[in-house]
Image (tube, rainbow, N blue to C red; front, side):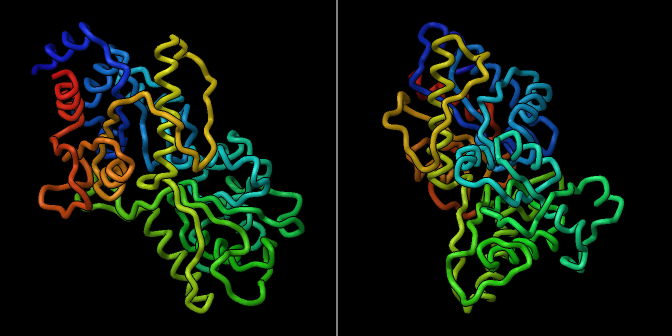
Length: 357
C-alpha cells in the first residue's frame, strides 16, 4: 500500500489501539542530520493522531530542549511529554536522594536541578577544589573557572547517590571520583570504608548500558556501557572480586520500558482529550508496570539490536529494526525482530499496513 493509501485507510478508521516508540540516533537522526523518511513518518502519525513517543538512550539536556531541536530538525511538532531520555526516569528518584553526584556533560547540572534534586554536584566541582584528586585530568584551569561551581561544603555532608546522566567527557576524573565515593565511609568525600562488599557505600545509577553507538564515523563508538564496564571492573578489583551492586536503567531494561509505557498511555489520553498542549505529565514510579494497556500493539523502531530490539522483544512489544544506524545485515541478533526494514518510514508504513489489513 502506498503512503497515500495508508492515509486514506487511517482516515476512514482511526485506531487508538496502536502506538509507536522511536529511538532517535540512527533512526530519526544521524548525529544532528535527519535521516531520509523520518520527517514523513512522524508527520503521518501526527496527522492521524496515532500516539508515539521517543525512547532514547541519549540525553544530557532537558526534554524540552531535546524536543525543540527535534521539532526544528524534522519539521514536525513534538511535545516534551513525548520523549523518554535515558535519564528521564531519574525524576522518580528526587524524593529518595537529596545530595547527588551527577556525571555527564556540563548541562546535566541544569537537568538534575530542574528535575528537583536539592544539591547537585558534578565531578568538575570537586576537581576545582583539588586537582590532585585526578592527576591525569585534561581539564584546564580556564575550563574549571568557567564551569565548576563552589559549594559550602563537599566533605561535611555525605553524598546520597551517584547518577550517570550520559556519557562523561573526562573519564579519568569521573572514574576516580566515582570509585572514591563507592568505597567511601557512608558517602563522605575523602574517606575510605573498612572491609569489602558487593553493596557500595552509596547507590550508583547508570542511565543506560549501550556499549556502542553510531555517529558520522564509519565504525561504531563506545558508549556509557563501556564506562560502566570500567567502573564495575575497578570496583571488583578493589573489593576482593566482589561484584558491584549497581542499577542500570535505559533500554533494554524492563524498568525503562515500564516507564515509557506509562508515558505512552498518558500521551494517548491527551490525544483523546485534546490536551496535547498540557505541560503536566502523570509521572510513574520506577519499577511499576501499568495495570492495563489500551494498546493492541506497540512498535519499537530502533537500530540497535542489543537495546531497542531485545528490549521490545522481552517486554512484549513489536520491533522494527532499521538499517540506518548500528545494525548491518549479517550482524548476529539476540532475538528475531518483527521486521527488518531500510528506514523508519518503511517501518511505520509496514506496521500500519499490517494493522489495517
